[in-house]
Image 1 (cartoon, rainbow, N blue to C red):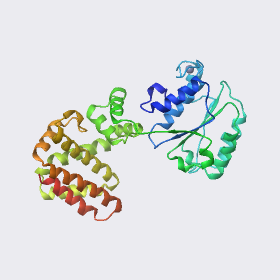
Image 2: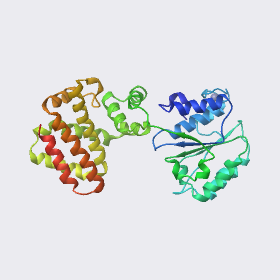
Image 3: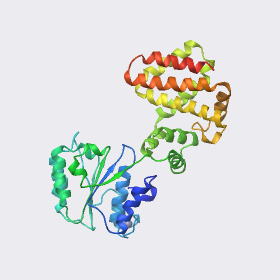
Image 4: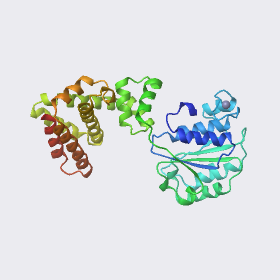
Length: 328
Ligand SMILES: [Zn+2]
């Protein structure tokens, strides 16, 4: 289980939690709300660990019995609600929460319930939970995690302290990937750029072979497109089209490349590049291409992305894009 100090971003949420611990004003129900991969579970675990730590500080000590139990996932006062089916029904909530909460904590002042993907609770289950969070025992703390708050009943929402998770700055993610995960510079750069501010997703990218491959393919295309024959360009069209699931990611990556070229052309600033390990190729393209051409590429890319969504004339739009990329 993570500790607060190991978490990247979400400073305000952590501060709120630490203030609550310091002032002994821990609420009975919190709603951690944010996209999958945003770090809700990590923060919830760090909070539980800190609240239960025997040292009584605002950060888990990592050494006491409670911290050790939390670390091994065997803390008797941290209850992780288990979902075995697609939804979490009233039976599970009754067994794992409403009945269980009547039993006092084993070794701590609090008993903390973690409910991941709380939106999977059926309406009946939510109503059962609601009864408990309306009149909870003194020691009970509920940490509900959801992708979007509107997926829960408003009656449940109104009982929770809402903690919204926002995207983390890509610079921070990059630094974290390099310093803590030992990820090389260029990969950290693009994984952070593509993560949309979700640290979990960025980590996933760095561990994914497909992501690295994709980056190489995009680089090959953008660097050598003007040396390719029309037949080769067409082959690329087919390659992209065949990977439709990943096509949006490809297109976003190509977009980032041309944004780099545009930015460099305008500012000559090498430090702001997303493709940080390709400064020469970026500079070379910036020299060759006109602003009009680069603008045309960016617009064509947006069009291809739209066509991809609507599934109409996708290949035609992609062809047009590659033709733009071929002229300079
Ligand atoms: Zn401790």
